[in-house]
Length: 455
Image 1 (cartoon, helix red, strand yellow):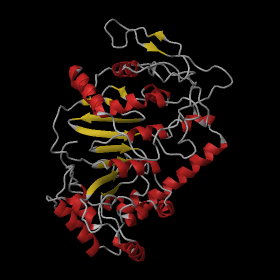
Image 2 (cartoon, rainbow, N blue to C red; image 1 turned 60 degrees about the vertical axis):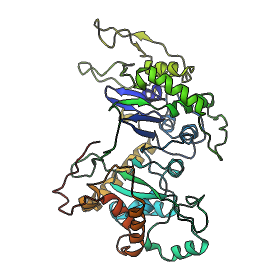
Image 3 (cartoon, helix red, strand yellow; image 1 turned 180 degrees about the horizontal axis):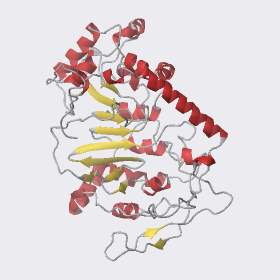
Image 4 (tube, rainbow, N blue to C red; image 1 turned 180 degrees about the vertical axis):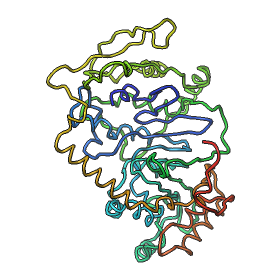
């Protein structure tokens, strides 16, 4: 976890593997990609990033919990996002897909879905305020697709009462999405296409190709000027204590980065290799040496400054603000011309009673009980997933298009079909099938068809 802290603002965790940071927005091929790292836990959400090495059994877990500051920064984004990535599912997302299939695959999730406790409330807010074209999540180890409408006309109290009496007619948009549409007006409907995939295991649905046929721009990562402006204007809000600095307007209006600041950032990026993210990965800790005996894990007492982060903050004219404890470093010995030559490496370890052993013997009774419970749950879920290959057949998902545009007429027709043809055996909305199938839909054997296209 301390390695990801070094790259709090994003960077290369390894050659050709880019990390968006605790929160971030980046461009690739003209596509804007946003992301939120971590898992939501209400106990830590409003705290600062106080965790630091040497971690204990509590802080090594809370360190990857989502913080309000990172969500606050994402909510300052006003320009359209094509893709959003998160570990957690947004709260309420299950109501916009085929819940019957999901309950068959993961029956133990039904109670949390029905009582509204499954998923991340901050991710739900980001979903409905930023309205990205696509949202991809992980966490629950099951393939699941959903389509979330935005900007639908506001329902009347009578209509909401009728909807409660007819639960099989598909989910209604979350309250507030129709704000701004006058009485009797037909607001334009936008969609977020949500997709989660299963674990990377044999005969599991862990891979799907999504096409973005209209992309323009170089196929390399580029900095996003709006996100850089957000980081500049919120840099002073960072807290390394348990108490988070008050966030202005968090419960109300979102603010935008001033146009003058955006223009200045855009000009600076154009002069700096057109904003291309440099391939400046460096190692900040020694790698595994298989020739040496397996060492017992010892928790470092500090996190080193990653040169990528220092270079990034220097580019923005911002002071380094991630020092939880000043590291002790030395230079790595390497051959001349090596990319590791002269790289600062932190090898300080906690050789004291506070030291945390990272092998399995260090698990306490509560951790062991939790691990055993998870293992039993996973085994039960495995037995219940005999029909997993049939979930979201090829005819509905293998031609899932990445186009960010949809014809309004076809969307409204899909809504009409959703109302007219809802299936009492499974509440997959026709809008979901219509949007995912697209014009080139072909029926066929699910195992015989493979998705094609480019990521």
